[in-house]
Image (cartoon, rainbow, N blue to C red; front, top):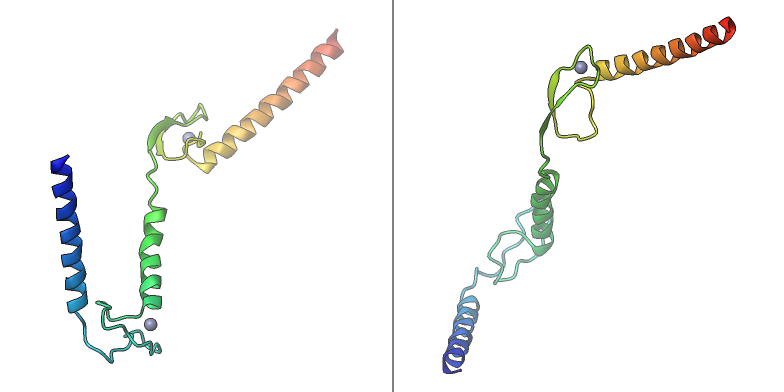
Length: 128
Ligand SMILES: [Zn+2]
Ligand SMILES: [Zn+2]
């Protein structure tokens, strides 16, 4: 009990000290935003040389690239087009072929196989 009380007091004293520091520290009056065309007067407590509006835009720009850098797991796969069967690395789990060329070839091979099967069936039917 006693330990917790003294700890709380110490925390309160610290926050008061921080408040005093920020109050006593000023950055001079009469400054304006350094962004060209912007004449917003800066607060004497504002440590930066640009206004809050431009400061916010700067923060947004910083956020944008980090959103793009989503961790994507790379994996080694083998081309689903059998005559190729080449090993390739992709971060797209839906990718089956090493290249568009193989994807097209595999598609055409399947179409040809389907046509041949259909032809075979009709031949069998005609023969019987
Ligand atoms: Zn500004
Ligand atoms: Zn391939």
